[in-house]
Image (cartoon, rainbow, N blue to C red; front, top):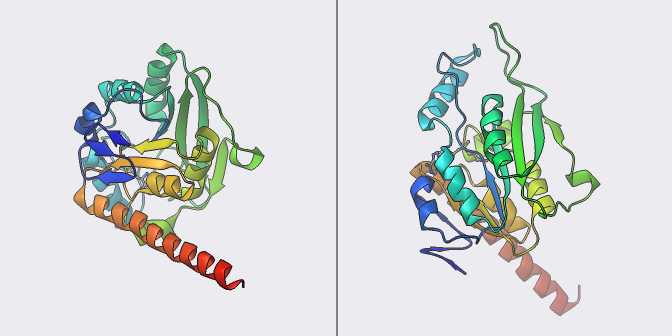
Length: 249
Ligand SMILES: C[S@@+](CC[C@H](N)C(=O)[O-])C[C@H]1O[C@@H](n2cnc3c(N)ncnc32)[C@H](O)[C@@H]1O
């Protein structure tokens, strides 16, 4: 299906703030986004180590968080409001205010890191990330007992971070649960802040259609390769299955 000038099952190296304006009304079933967080301008939170300092500097230069008029655009392109937004605690209030005015239901889902980076100043550990889930009346939440929990406790996903070279990659298993709970096969899932492409990859694995945008060429290429590599593996697997069926093993 054509989505204005875009196509489904593709990702684009574009600024989503501009791209979204070219997407027609009411074409997307589910949005899952992880926009750059607003970072405390006064410092990194006292994290130990130069790697962490580098990470905070990188994130701080990405952007200053999502803009309200882009949220309006997201509402416009969804068939019905059905959106998960990763955020930090300072952003929750703003999102709540925006979507409460749209009379949406709200759930707060949390990811707790069992091995957080130690901090050395006057504050609690940075061991929790938040996901705000908003849905319009009548939007189904399906899934099952195991996929519908509202909190996750896992170690930091250092393996994925190293493999896909993105500092804020999110756990694929959590995102898969959001997709299972809030969409059906062949539905269209969109991510406007792709990073390493976790949302589009998970959508593909779960037989959903996807579309995604990433502004940084390096991350875009990482995401593209990650999604394409999965396609190759999947095709090889399907060919093997057909072959085994034919020869009756
Ligand atoms: C927090 S990261 C997303 C990480 C992703 N969830 C993952 O699992 O890899 C946010 C991404 O949004 C991208 N970004 C920031 N502003 C953007 C914009 N205006 N349009 C598209 N991408 C943008 C950044 O380059 C960054 O890679």
